[in-house]
Image (tube, rainbow, N blue to C red; front, side, top):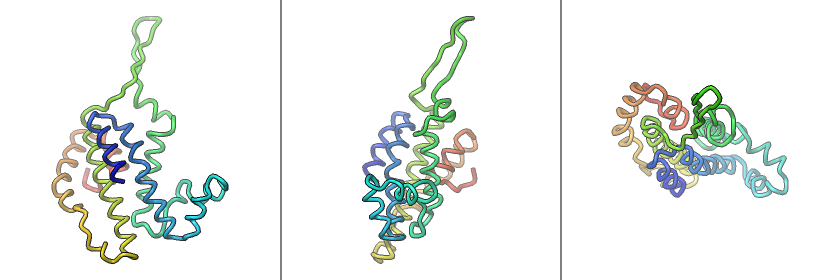
Length: 194
């Protein structure tokens, strides 16, 4: 998760949220998979044999089946994974319309622009969302694993100080740029009043 977060942040530091969310996707998915393994150790065998027996794997790990009873906030975390898949992985209208713009050049020609970089509000929203989501997923993993390793229950991940520092900024950003609401709520799992 740390490696994926650092790589994602490097992409965000140059206004490339598309690459950032793709890079962070395995960290989210791995947390969900851990929850499935704790739900039932048989799920670990299904995962290990996924190439030999793809049908049981798809049944246990695709879509909402990836949610688990063991991982707190599993439905919300799985919804983030689905949002990343829809918006950044699968070529659908939302995917390609976000990056393309068209303008008439003259009567016979149209200019097509492919955008690689985010505008400032979207880049800022993605940074806040990536960091908040990281804390949410780490907290869910900590709470799940504390059932086996009680010392983890006291591990402070710094979520409260993070919220204290950044929630006012996130709220202000959402108020001045309503177009970033989806990023903050659906990817970052921000629950502030935006």
